[in-house]
Amino acid sequence: MAYYNNNDPMGHRGKGLVESCKISLLPLRSRYIRRRLDAILLFSPSWCNTSISNSSQISANFLLNNCARTYTNKKTLKNKRELVEVVDGLVGVMMTSSNREKPDIESGYDGSSDEDSTENSRAEICPSALCFFDQIVASAQDKKVVLFLDYDGTLSPIVNDPEKAFMSPEMRATVKSVAKHFPTAIVSGRSRNKVFDFVKLTEIYYAGSHGMDILASFADSDCTIEKTKETKLFQPANEFLTMITEVSKSLIEVTKEIKGATVENNKFCVSVHYRNVDKKNWKLVAQVVNNVLKDFPSLKVSTGRKVLEVRPMINWDKGKAVEFLLRSLGLDDSETVLPIYIGDDKTDEDAFKVLRERKNGCGILVSQVPKKSEAFFMLRGPSEVFLGEMEGTINI
Image (cartoon, rainbow, N blue to C red; front, side, top):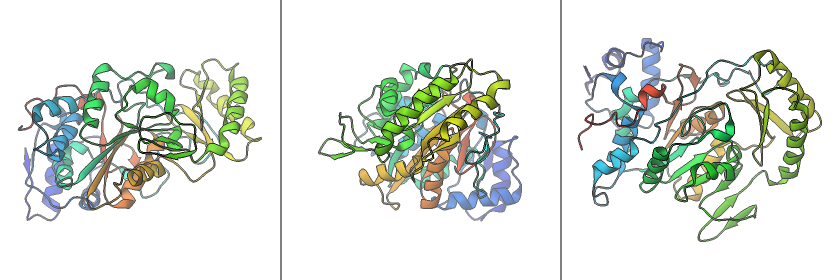
């Protein structure tokens, strides 16, 4: 067990952190510790006397449960234990079936094909969110928390068939309950309608197509921008809709002879999945996609977790979507609001970067392996997200 002293500005606290959390996979040198502590201090008002032990037995839900306990107004919460039990399942299926093998696709797209890397030289390997839990809670005191969640790999497991990436009933119930206390949004590369079909909750906000199709409340609308008392729909790539439909059809045609390749039309973007393709044909997938896009110069390709993402070449991404939602909800004040974004893929880095540059907020990367990221923290694998693990770990 390690205790942290308020009078120790950096050194011993960093050493204790390493000894306590035992993050054996992370290169936690003293300079690294100081850099990470500096990063946390950007949004943490103070350091608390902290006791953290046996971190391998504490779940990622411990983080959110305690945050929920701290964030929620005591006057409006009759049963704090009930909320804690509900929040405990929030990320209960993160990374349960993900495959972290790097794709061997040689392409001239916007950066490396390495799905485990991020291109910004400022990015660095994240420490465990569990080790900094008390500091995260302290930073949320007297603030409004806004929760942003990726879908695939965060609320549902990564599966071989994208059409079967179902979230569990327990996860759905948890997200529904959390949304009663915090504004909650799902920001996904999937089409907005498809994400809703998976989640089936009207209490949350949806941003599909990597944030290019945003519905700020549940209501049907075909307008590019519609503002009423009940809804706000924003589609910054609406002019590309016909083009995306056309390129989707072309990609379906050119990949139909590649066994295992599937094309998913996500309305304002197209996903070409190669998870089920024989590794020797990965390069072929990249080549046929590249050939199709020669006729569509206003579209670009980025890589994800065994997927190639075709998107309009506009200045919009998940980070822009987060900023838009914060403004739309009247929660853009960095002094009174704490956004938390949890995601596992390369496209989530844009959202992590926004929170880092705002100098408030908490980006949490879900990954089974240490990797560079714009996020402040990392959660590793299913051992940190079991349901019910938090029982007895906090005082209600």
